[in-house]
Length: 195
Length: 172
Image (spheres, rainbow over the protein chains, first blue to last red):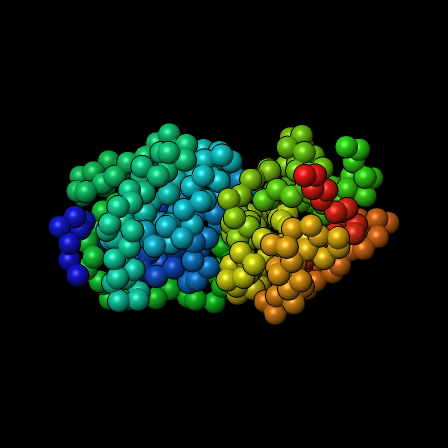
């Protein structure tokens, strides 16, 4: 199922770069491999992993970014989740959240279900979609040098970045999957939990 | 069009419940709330492309220590079902106010299927449903629904009946 336009980046290397020295970065990850990649880069309470709710990752990031305007929020998700929530690119651009950035790990595949081709394997350019929705800063990385350039920008700009990763599957690295636990530890680490 | 006073009271109830983010897909029955949210410097109004976005927005708000509410009409409830697993799995509050169509002097038959299943569908998805029929009960019901949602960390929907909001008038 390889294709001429497949990305070549190693997804674990990409995410390890994006999440290096995270400090107090607030991270929201999309279901499937993006969640495993973030877990492999180092589990921490300020990572909120989605294991479902497909299409919702970017919007969780928006609600969080609006609630925490002095903190940086980074959404890390896959092309399938972003495609399902494609309208949220318009919603987020219209809302305006200068402290929110999105990194899409684009392997042009639905990796969890047998590596079927997604729309980005055919015709869709998510960075162009984001730009058309009103995102002023969009970028696509095809080399680790470009990932290294984008990584600090994802910590300071309202940036939508597509990272063209290889369709190669990695061993699963599973973080906790109890949503109530993940939410509770996140809120405690952020200092917003009461009682 | 003059704003019925119960609609202003609903906004007051949302403010009293410390709602700071309002996601919405517009409905005529929510017009006052949407205007009030945009006029309020302490509120984040977020126009959504589809109602399920609002559930994810509310989850993110909760993670960040804020409370959100989502406004939709009954046809939008059907767009939400899988996303309702998010607050349920994460034991997060979720509050939505739903204007009903398809149940009272409805002109548009396309509103009827979803309108007639809204309450059952929400219930089946684990959402606590309250239904407001009379102007004098609406604000209190919204306040109680917010308490239930945020104090007990459950999903709650308040349905505003079509008789309450008034049928949409179509003129040929």
